Every structure is written in C-alpha cells, then in structure tokens.
Length: 204
Image (cartoon, one colour):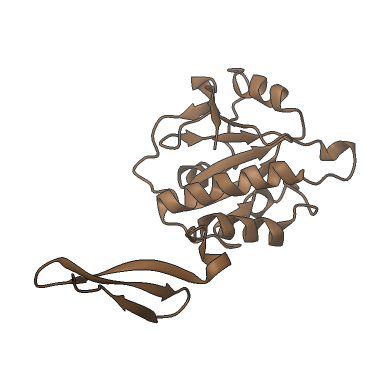
C-alpha cells in the first residue's frame, strides 16, 4: 500500500492526542477534488484537516500523522480518539458513490489501522461523519457500507497458503521432540486437524 506523505498546516491540527487512544475511524467525502482538499488542508485559515485523503483513482495521501489530532469530526473530544479519512467526490453535483478502486484502497487502509490499534471493524467503530455531526450529510446515503465493511474484514483475514485452495493439503515435517530429529513427513488436510504421516525410510 503506497501512501504519499504531505503535511497539513500546523494551524489545522493539534499535536498529540492528549493521552487518548484511537478507538474509531470516521469516514468523510471531500465534496471536492483531491488536489483542492490538499490545498485546503494546507491553508492556515481553513481550521480543518484529516489524517488521510483517498482519491477516486485509489491514491492515498497522509496529511496528519496518526499520533496527532486532526480537526475532522467537528467535536474535539471525538477527534482525539478517531482517525479521519476523506474521500474524493462531489456529491453536491449529483448522486455520488466511491469508485471500486477508491473503495478498495480505503478498505485496505482501514484494515491496516484496525490491526494496529486492535479495533474490530463494524458499524460502531467505522462510522460516517454524520453520526457524529448530523449537520453534515457525510459521506451520504450512497456510501456502500455493507460492501465496505466486508472488504475491510477481508483485508484483515489472515492470508492462506497460495497452494491450499488448489490441493487442500499442506506439507509438514514431523520431529521427535526428544532428539529434535526429523522422523517423517506428512500432509495436513487444510481446515481440519488431520495429518497423514509418511515415515522416514530406514537407511539400507
């Protein structure tokens, strides 16, 4: 996952989190272009920022470090315990939904955040901006929450061996715990506790 590093104006975020822990992720739509949002967050007069921006092409830009408090949710106490992610889009111009590549990049980013902070992704921990500040219809009713959370969960699932789906078996080596010498090989049946053993042949 490639993340471009740019910095929001120091006037638009708070250094540190006041001893608070990250507990949730807040999802936003920019209602503008990626470059326009970058320029706005870098403008000292805007008094707003987010930790990440995700473009419609799936490009990710980090503008506030996670250890710092971005001014993104409209509630400073909430800001101290959340990570804000903005998504490029212009719902004011008509019906809007994130692109497939944008949604995938965002889901992978959120999964990485959840892993690092021990967050279980669900509708209580990955939330729309509107759930915190109802004055903002953000990211709006067209955000595909079910698909999004499913993708986040998919990225958090442990990777399976590349050959497991094809063979259903995983080669293992068997050792004598007393001598730490290999005494045979076996085939682990993936998804079960069965191991079919092939003992070592004695030397001739």
